[in-house]
Image 1 (tube, protein in one colour):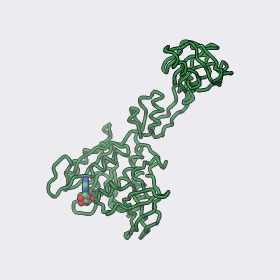
Image 2 (tube, protein in one colour):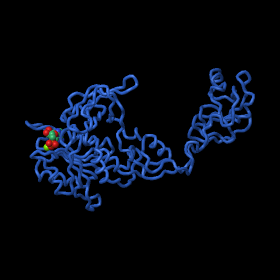
Image 3 (cartoon, helix red, strand yellow):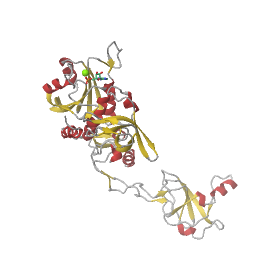
Image 4 (cartoon, protein in one colour):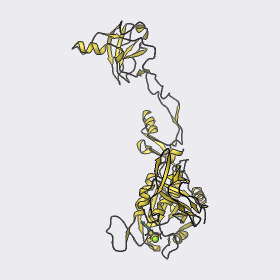
Length: 426
Ligand code: AMP
Ligand code: MG
């Protein structure tokens, strides 16, 4: 048996970062930028008002107070999106809205609250007035957002390798980028194997079960940024399996479930050994002991032969999901150009004793709750690898080390948080 770390290292050594492609801005969310982004313009492009108010020359307001307002002649209005045609002369003011470019000649903006506009409005039916009273001394630069204060033309704004989050989408949009170069998403083909399986679109007959793995695994591929391609279900015979496998050989990675244990019909590993190079391991973990990994013959997008990584996960629904988290997830993230492949892990106090008799690392499904400033981990109940609802209830996987025969109630354990993304720990 090999350790989880050894299996992971071996897998990661055999998957490569994919090429870059142009992606529409919004669909690049979660992908890794593959170009340095330099600002082609200043943002904001012009000095503009940070408040609704009056653009003034601050020296005109030196003696202004609410008792002795300083009166300025109103010579126009400028709204966001337009440019004032009038230049501000001493003794004048231009009404200005937030975001509007500051008129030439003005050096500050006095907000409405510091003018007598409200009183003037209530005492006249006129929509505009010839004069405005300034109630407070202004300073040069007051309530003005300077051109380029956010982004300076020519500056390096985002480095290649940055993960695109909503904020980066916003920054790129502010620069008018409708497309960006990103590391492309891997296409991951998902194939379930087993004579007992039926797809969810078909009626269930006696003795059969729905192939839940097809969908849980495809959903995991999607969650981690890949593009799942469902190949359906292969029967436990050579022809069926080969036929299905060949439909997936253009993908960047192939994931199968089932057929990797030692039962009579566990032929995935035998077929794969014939179709490529296969390593078959038993990994020191529970759930998920049997695992196959290798490369099978395929072709790339341009028709050139190449080998594609294949991960053969165990069939039990919990085992396939847990082994996906341990091995397929980091492989997908690496292909996408991500650097931090670790699921965030927290410390929690275990609420019940866990016995570990066979020297494997146990990943127990647990509900994690905060309690008096620390986390508590309560197991989801029966931990059988067929109890898929335990994954649904779980917020994390409690890690019971392989060298511990027993971890007792009240001990602190490490918990991998299933719904926290890797960027949390980056
Ligand atoms: P295997 O690894 O092929 O021996 O499968 C182990 C067990 O997992 C089988 O007894 C099935 O009940 C279950 N199983 C295998 N594949 C699937 C699947 N695609 N969806 C749901 N359960 C499965
Ligand atoms: Mg099977």
